[in-house]
Image (tube, rainbow, N blue to C red; front, top):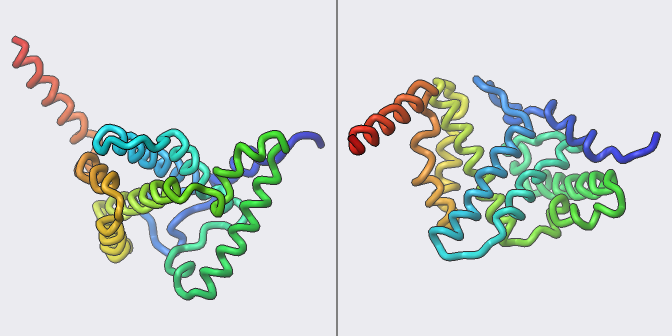
Length: 209
């Protein structure tokens, strides 16, 4: 059989569930999480431009974020409480993760491997880009926990507090700006979102008339 298996591998990420040690009101798979992280990471890059006068490559950051968990098609998703339980476990997992990244890269045509090396191989990702993706990853996890708690799921109470602290401690002003701009509306229902939209339109119409 001719061809390469990279896209077929990525397609199967949908079956890998996150937050495996917790009861979830709304389950989340790896592609859903990766898309969310990519959106947040891209926004952090744009915030860097517009609010802080920076020039980071927002598109590259988004691309790295999109693939940041791709190796989990081989390793699976290891819950953070287990991954960070001890230095031995963490070092062993990172070794396995590196091997998985190399194996996944090999599923691409040779002509494309150099294009993907800086997206898939964590050791070769620019540290600055890594910081943005890590911040987006933490924010995404925080929003997930906030949503679960809003649904009355107390399984996520402690995780929410921990992630809130970790996001607050980030040495990245773009992350704090993102939180101030977007987080308050995250748990609104569709009716509440539409109601605010209707009120804004009514106010604008009143001003014009």
